Amino acid sequence: MGDLFRQYWMPALHAEELPENDCAPVRVKILSERLIAFRDSQGRYGLMDEFCAHRGVSLWFGRNEESGLRCAYHGWKYDVTGQCVEVPSEPETGNFCANVKLRAYPLVKIGDILWTYMGAPQTRPPLPEFEFVQVPAEQTYTSKRWQECNWLQALEGGIDSSHVTFLHSGQLNSDPLFKGSKGNQYNAGDLKPFFEVADTDGGLFVGARRNAEEGKYYWRITPWVMPSFTMVPPRGDHPVHGHIWVPIDDENCWVYTFDYHPARALTGPERQAMMDGYGVHSENIPGTYRPLANKDNDYLMDRDAQRRNEHFSGIKGIAMQDASLQESMGPIVDRTKERLVATDSGIIKARQKLRKAAIALAEEGATPPGVDPAHHRVRSVAIVLPKEDSFMESTADAAKVKPGVPQTSV
Amino acid sequence: MAATAAEARFRIDAPIAPSRASRVVALDQDAATVVRRVATQPWASARFFVYDDSPGSANGHGGSADSLKLRTMDGSVVMLGETLAGVDVAVMVAADDAGAVAAQSIGAACTARGIMTAGLVLSDGDHVGRALSALRPHARVLLVPAEPDDLVQLLTALRA
Image 1 (cartoon, rainbow over the protein chains, first blue to last red):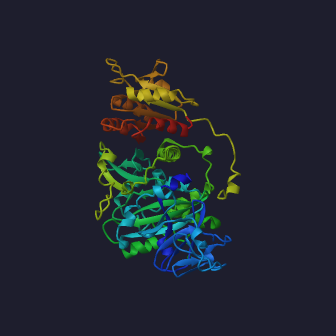
Image 2: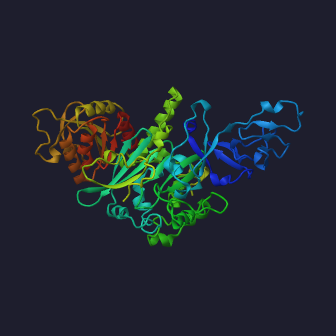
Image 3: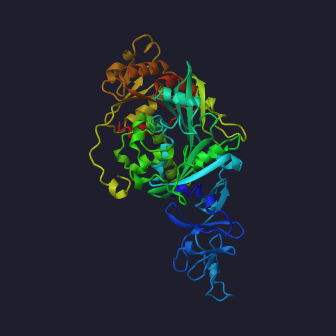
């Protein structure tokens, strides 16, 4: 699966982590590799092996100055490509350092995210084109949090629409980024949705339908773009949100969570609510990306709020309601003990697609779904349709990105 | 809590309860080809059927839902109602809308018994819309367009 992830551009850091030229370097772990990220004197971004080629010292202690990162131990200096450009102990006229290069990956800022590609240079795809990083800065917001479990069990929550009716039921009418939409009433009025899982070139569209007015269904369409991008169907004119999960190692992942509006700037209260951890964002321990509610404090469980149905699970906030349960499964859930049901078909299909793509890559070198930027140009949809209509046909346009055009929402 | 790898190892390691009783019904000839192939694999308790829509049979037209005639993999004729005792999930497989009447009967019989229904639409062409329309009212979960392997994966996940 690691080889599969190396076919894609992935978020490596939030852009705020390297806020200015020559700022402090940042340790990064992705796909079980320890890396160091830095922004040099010219504003170029670098992502490379964390450890100095000389004695294996962490370059986190290094000095980011004069267009390179200098090891604090003996002064070896590297540029953003990982090329060693100076070895002070060697003769100035020598070319020793020309043969010293750390493994490095491209690091590119698009939107609020620094993206990397960790695969072979010859298969490097075009840059990502997800709408949330393409809209103007005032229309988008991205947060980041550490989740202490395997990325896949976290992702599976993103395409499992049936849990919303229960786990998040307390939030639909109270969270400032959810409340007030007509769709919330449909959600509350039909607790047994029907599902359609539609295969697409880039992944899946998972449609959940509930009864609406006579002769009509309320549909919520969740796109999944391989390997780990999902969007939540919108509610009213609230910003649209979603996630990208990035493996740190087998037992941890980064979650990049975004909210954007395709047609207008986020309001001050909306942006503040996102920063405060409402909607699908989390409130983090200041200066870190670890959620304030985490497994070491039982996620600040509030049994009284649970009894009041303020929070169905007793945990505050949609993001941590999901994360707490997904982490409770263990770092890698033992799927041999699962009892899946037919309504888990989205999860079943997603696993099948990931497995097939990994095998096709290994055996035939096939480019997996989701690499092509055309696959990124999708939207989630919430819509009321006549009962006889197919959601895939009726929402074909609404589920595509149209710059500047508002999302289709109820 | 089980949030560490060390603690996760202490989860009770008891055998999982018996598999879900599953019934798979092919609603047309293309679907029957797929279902017959899948039926040859070793399954715990899944049973496989084909809706018999031969010309002049009038199967499913006018009778009760339970009286819908299905053929087993060895060609025997059984009534739908006989096959649903103790069943947890019924999976309908269609490539077009030839089995719309059967889907309606299966949906009604399953609703009456509280049996979960799922549908797989095999077609990826002109017939997909018709097959979807036939299945949508009666399947709580639909996979579209589905590959033959989706049926295997679904039944495997259900421990059928």
